[in-house]
Length: 140
Image 1 (cartoon, rainbow, N blue to C red):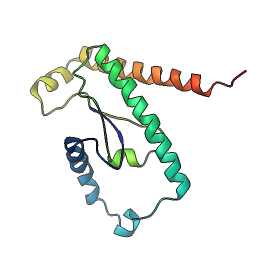
Image 2 (image 1 turned 30 degrees about the vertical axis):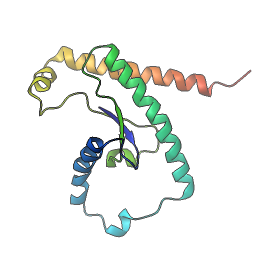
Image 3 (image 1 turned 45 degrees about the horizontal axis):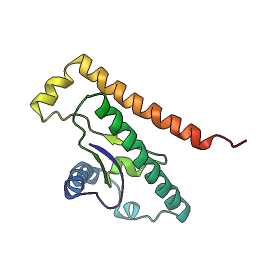
């Protein structure tokens, strides 16, 4: 599963995963006033653009992972993960394996499997970087 930030989850399972992962934040000693601070309009516009670019990044990574046969492609999803909220750039949360799954746990102990996962992620990031370079290239 590969996630990008969204205020509205793409499906109930994505929402449930985000709620579970975000629940640890409640243990931090932040005041409710700090959590309810409204972002300035400019920051909101940047976030929206980053969400759009993040969606593309996730798609590229998912395709590379699938093409390389590293693991099952469980799709690109969106949800309001806390770890994605604080980013001020395109970002992705990638979950390629789960320690709670005995087969995945065995695979994660295998150095070759971990290397294939890393290579697939790197290929996705490099492909995405190439796309950005083409977009940002000055026109003649």
